[in-house]
Image (cartoon, rainbow, N blue to C red; front, side):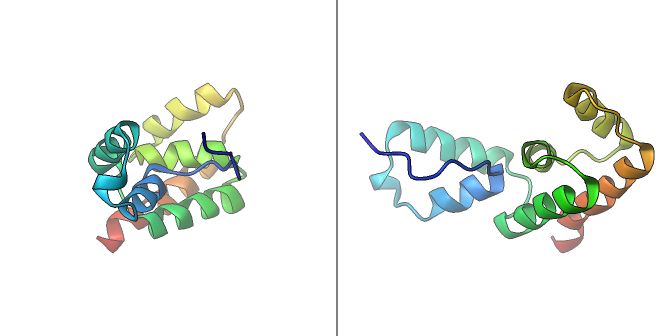
Length: 111
């Protein structure tokens, strides 16, 4: 049994980067399934994902969990972003949603 050293919220791109450092033969079944999942659904690389999370937290007053949720999905419209903010049960102004969208565009500009 492994001891938990640190608990941290991380995005799918960060999970993918961590698992890429492990040899496939050294992965257990759950790690392989997770690696397969993040390979299909991580929409940006780890560095860009981390930078977007940091900027969403610092510039848009989001909790880290909310920012990670946004980076995992990378919504492309105000309507999609509003769908997330409804679940957070707090009012997010349109200007803040627009700021979030501009941060998320970073992932497509770098590709």
